[in-house]
Amino acid sequence: MVARPRIAVVGSANIDLTTFTDRFPKPGETIFGQRFDLGFGGKGANQAAAARLCGADVFMVARVGSDLFGPATIENFKKLGIDASHVKQVEGLSSGVAPIFVEPNGQNRILVVKGANDALKAADVDAAAETLKTAHCIVLQFEIPLETVYYTIAFARKQGIRCILNPAPGQPVDMGALTGLDYFVPNESEAETITGIAVRNVEDAKKCAEKLVAGGIRHVIITLGANGSLLAGGALSEHVPPFAVKSIDSTGAGDAFIGSFAVFLAEGVPEREAVRRANLYAALSTTGVGTQKSFYDRRRFDAEWAVRGRN
Ligand code: RIB
Image (cartoon, rainbow, N blue to C red; front, side):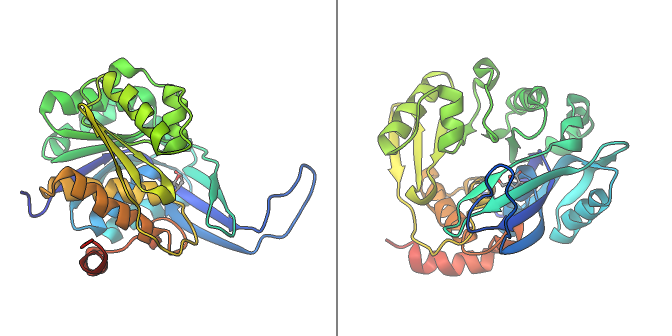
């Protein structure tokens, strides 16, 4: 049981340019969108923000561009209380950006231009090694070079540090490099890209997770959006049901899940219960616009959990 977990995120930081629209333009067509929102995002930064808001000490290893977004992103980490001493600007590269389109039902479509995120290398992980060694958990995603991700997994394994990988955006993976990984947390489309099994329902998710576990990953959690999540490990797999909310923007819900799950688990909450809590934390994040700014802090989350977590 750790009262104040230390969570390290080796990952991406983006600027999100979110447009709310009733429909998408056809080729050659110009239409009006309803609303625009500019915010701090990136799967790594979002997961760091969620972990911090849930009460952990968080440190980030990332690269930002030599544009006006770079210093603003570093400032945002500091404002959130995230240790950004291993977040550096890269000369001559743009920051990561993500044009995002959100439909009236809250469904999103995201395009990521990685920019400086692609400059985060194994040597940068080595440079942060002394800090990383103090973490209870290292969290990774796929918006930085995959070699850096594999290198960090091997580092975590060698140091005996719990490691959670969110393989987003979905890309073909060297499964051998993931052997021994503690938690692999894709959504439906990422799980399909990696295993070749289409995930349209809980049964598909079970098949998919079982294939990943058979490949050497200890625990797999497939996040299923409004259907909750599927937890698998060893010979068991279990559907963990969702919490109903009025969703207006689902962007960053997966990140909210992962950042909060890392904290709950490090606090010593049993695995299934940690998944349930993360389901609620993620669902609540969809009731607000944007990513980091829609995440609940621990006090608000605990108040919701006290009412809704009992059943
Ligand atoms: O998961 C949501 C995130 O994906 C956004 O913040 C965007 O930057 C992309 O990384």
